[in-house]
Length: 307
Image (cartoon, rainbow, N blue to C red; front, side, top):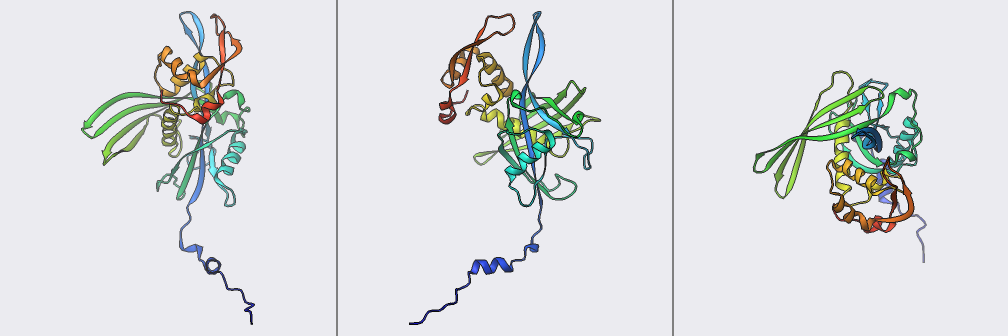
């Protein structure tokens, strides 16, 4: 009996050794992060000073071309030997000093002309974080980093055809400390195609000086829509609050994200299975102390029904 001592070559290994990677163009890849938190603004309501919660987003002023001097969400090019997730945390730490934030992937953006330098594909990520858990943001110039109050408000809605709906919104970004206000008009068109809804957007700048770079307004708008949808079937809204909170604070967060007022009795009946009462309380203004609650861990796994 004889044995063939030669080991047969692996066809796939041979293919990979001779593969010419130059036959395809290589687009660049970036990661972009949409980071939301909750801020508080003091208001005077019937001679009582109350704190009103507002949604805020982190923006950074670009120091290089293209779009030098424009505001942008944090992000940058990934290294060839790192994963998307690793790049997200590295870029965020480098640009803002923020770390230990949970991000989820939002969408992949690949329009041909979204970056004037070259073909760039971007994987965007979104996070909702409690402001108290964040380190102080910093960069090469702290005046070039800031939290902006972001609001999306409906202006009008009209049916153009039996199968087409047009909605117009204003999207605003305000940083009172820096004296900056940015405004955009977003026209959203929805059209029925077979058994699906096809959506398209037109974005118009209403600013002369300060602006937002690239297609980041589109990314932010998409993140707001995703957040409004997900908050209705998950516990994501709780990530904007401390571990212990009042039911009033929780309702304010839901109203802020959804962009509409909620009936107190209905909200508390809906939220009751998701929270548990603690033996602690908190005084809110001149009112009597309010009981503090926490999220039931089981609710994270079990999921929730739409509000």
